[in-house]
Image (cartoon, rainbow, N blue to C red):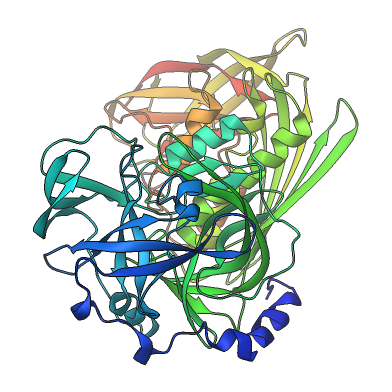
Length: 591
């Protein structure tokens, strides 16, 4: 069992007992109730605009939304911190809002406008957030139009309702009586990956609540400040040579329990995410939405709830993590690079993020692009598996060998995080890649059959001609396929080609993006033993697959589905040392 190891947690927890910090911790009796909030009331909010210093800004209550299942408070912020931020910036989410010195709620939505009214915002009432500490399922509006009890004058027009959008969007001029607000959610900051890999991540997360943003930051070295309401905090999904994190604001602290963000991150419910301190370098005043740019610091706690009203957790423990290690050797230059990261143990995020860690390592070691051959060995370990899962494969791409090298990684991840046959306690994943500019391919020149007819229970004799790239004379192989006795009579096709998933007409990046974005396919295997055997021994790019298929069975790019079973497999595998290119189809009649 591995944990985030850091001594700074003791310092942070001890600091909570100091008399100077006790005044920051809000008791439930000191909450300003929603029932007493009225338009015209003024208060102060707390947030970090630069560094780790908590600053105050002022706000005025403009109104309250009306409608089930909850209410939000509309306010206008002001002060130097707001002017420097360009409005209610992403990363300010969770900023505690106080009226008469009492906790009233946390900033959660910003006005979708780059104009003079970008200082408008909505905050989530304190009661909805405190319910998270009691593990209630507090709800607040996640979308829709919510009426205001009194019209307000905004940007030269009267607004009578507030539209709440689920996601941040490009600011556009707003007209009519409805004002649109978007989450002040911190974007998902990502560092350590290339522009091309980042585009794959964007495509993969296009339906998620988070918005990926490339960052220059990562894990910083700065003194861990006392964690008080208004402090900048980070929620870390990946930490190491690749980093993925979100910066927000601590809203409330009572002892070692905390609330932050004022809205969901992913909305997963019960989670086990890492909470860290954070350092804000600046507020990026983007034309789409301003956001805080910064680095995460030392681990300080665990996020255990990710709900619509905010995130919650404790500062007395750190989450368990999963280790990914990638070793890449450039055989042409004789250079080896080792990269690694620790990440949260969630199946939905592991499927997306682990291949990104592997791809980043390969790209950093390859330091180039284009054609090449990759020899890949993947080893996955987890409690509940009968043994470490190990797969070897060879990939060649004329365009993008770096991405091709990680195409088997999502399938290995599923054994650890999406195993259909029993629970698995994931331990680690190791990826070893050997890269070369050498082209190790073989072309399928011919597939000749001794006869175009074969009987049920008979044998189909096939002679293959394979020609290695720039390797001289073709190589001949003769194989026999046993036709099962219950194989359907009538026309059939002998399909001969690579057993792997690579296709010359599909770029590796498109294959990887489809694997990451789609739902994992249901397993067609009877048990874990059969699934392990297939993953370790079948579907390699260096195997020639000969398969007899009844006419009418559609082709498939899924290697599992290309091995079609009746009672027995009607085909053969021929092992080679090259990546197989080309395909042949021969009409056959089964009598």
